[in-house]
Image (cartoon, rainbow, N blue to C red; front, side, top):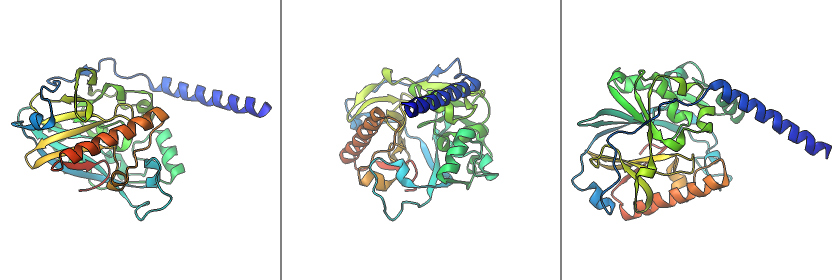
Length: 309
């Protein structure tokens, strides 16, 4: 009994410290705007949705890489396989819409990773990286990928607020739009992103309650209202994880983010890791929906969260 009480005491203290830390960080931006121009789909299927749709230019950007145990990213992964400790690319995706301008999907690593393994991580993420033996490295910062024209960016769509996808936001000018599922603005995002949410960005939210089902996905949004970019709700890895279907000038691409980190997990049906049983089930359902979509539309190119095509 004394041991149990002692453990409960430790848990209470840890919770109090965590709560204090979150309070110290402050809240989310008070004015998270609704995503403008977006619409629920009017089509009955994806073939209709993508026919005669506007196209966007697209380029895949490799910002950095991570060396870590890939097993920590998958549910039910085997103890050993050839690429378990192979480096993972850290990616961003550039798109140009003919009317609305230049955007990114995810921002990868900040240029702060040029100086250290921890980059602009907060103490929590730095501690996790250290204890897990994770090695981070910056290869090409966003400003070089974009030829020093980050000021031309209108915004960045976020698949989820894990720092390997969001830390590069800090390299973008104030006022840049940052767009994510409304559910992604949660406690875990706050814990892992330092004071990012105190910065003066144009915070915007995708409200999938305003979307519709487009088989096999339960909720999708036509981002610009012209069929060029689709936000697809793929919860599980995080509660607001979002994938993006792009009608590009070089074919249709499906940026699935960490709904599936890499081909090995996808091919062997290992859903991404998640923080709770409910989220793990959602992650499995999202992966199943992506695979069903791929079977139905085999010409669509899947782009995984941490794998080069």
